[in-house]
Length: 298
Image 1 (cartoon, helix red, strand yellow):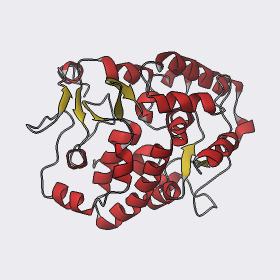
Image 2 (cartoon, one colour):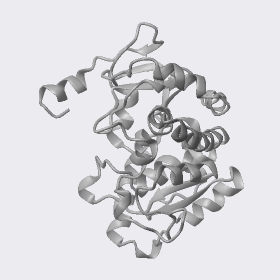
Image 3 (cartoon, helix red, strand yellow):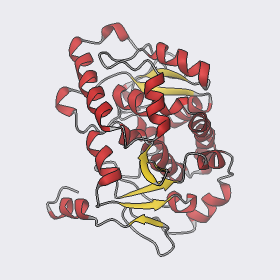
Image 4 (cartoon, rainbow, N blue to C red):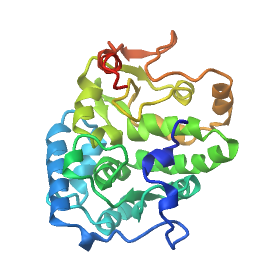
């Protein structure tokens, strides 16, 4: 299998399963259709992450949680979230049925519309779910959309995605999306903090990413990230760390064309590989993934 694109990883169901009437693939959230058990699952996940993230998540994420109508006792309404987002950063949340085509996904981001799945995981899937659900999308992503820097960066990622698709380098841009929007770390006052949604919505990875001795943590470098594969089946073997969120503004204004050309001329790197020139913040032991490989589970 090839490496998933940002869009295909974002929505885990097959595109052929759905043919929405709307050209942009949007649907109604159907909030009134959620069962009490689904709201209870949201409550369990919300309360668990709310306890874990103070002291681990970045200031922008924690501020977003406070300012948005993210209640602990029920799945949020997309329209209520959008009302706050529109006033602050011009974003809105739109419901989609699952996997959407790459061009649709990036067109939404380019227009400051965040496409979110409306289903929530089952109670037996609390600790791991490969395809993102409404908890991942709303709890993990939406707080950061209140931050002007992140709001601009994700819009630029949408615009860049349409171009990368035309150039045939969508896999490279997907790595940037993955190692920032989904699994990014940032240094604040000298400490590692979470801003990526894939970490912020996961109880186990919230701890692993910032505290475990197993993964490498490397200063973010665009050319390096464009070449680096990622894990979709386990914790990341490497996390890339920004020095504050402000570098995302520079990335949003960067012409990726020369970087794509350089990356295309060099070998693709495996997730846990270190290079001589890496600015290593913490060199990982590799303990976690080595154990998984010994037991044949990775």
